[in-house]
Image (cartoon, rainbow, N blue to C red; front, side, top):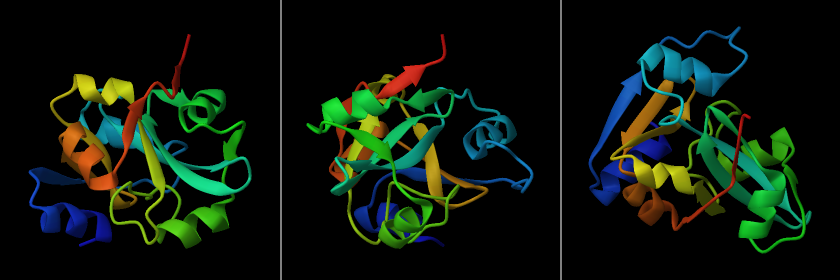
Amino acid sequence: MTPGINAARKAGIAHAVHEYAHDPASASYGLEAAAKLGVAGARVFKTLVVSLDGRELAVGVVPVSSMLGMKLIAKAAGAKKAAMAAPAEVERATGYVLGGVSPLGQKRRLRTLIDASAAEFATIFVSAGRRGLEIELNPQDLQALTGAVFADIAQHAE
């Protein structure tokens, strides 16, 4: 049980937990999850923490098949600049290890932006709070639980 799963249970939202054998040699946690769960990369979302203008941490939730656009998330958050947050800062703020950061149940509730493509699906997969563990839920439920906004923040591979 992780804080992410507990948050979904406590809120009483429909969800499913999926576990798979995580390979420590895997270069991409998200793509590994998609492959091992047999789900399209567009439906599996990674949770990335950025620093906005060097002052505020925020969470970007984007498909594992794309990249988080720094200019896009900065603009959507009303900031001038966004950069990936330092790993130690991410772990301290969220309470999760890298590769297992869930948008749910974070130690400190960070402003969250979910890529607008999530709204196209009945359910999406996000980390449940540790490597090898995903939670499947409705994107609107994820939005409600995290207080997130939907915005175009993903850069899709050309």
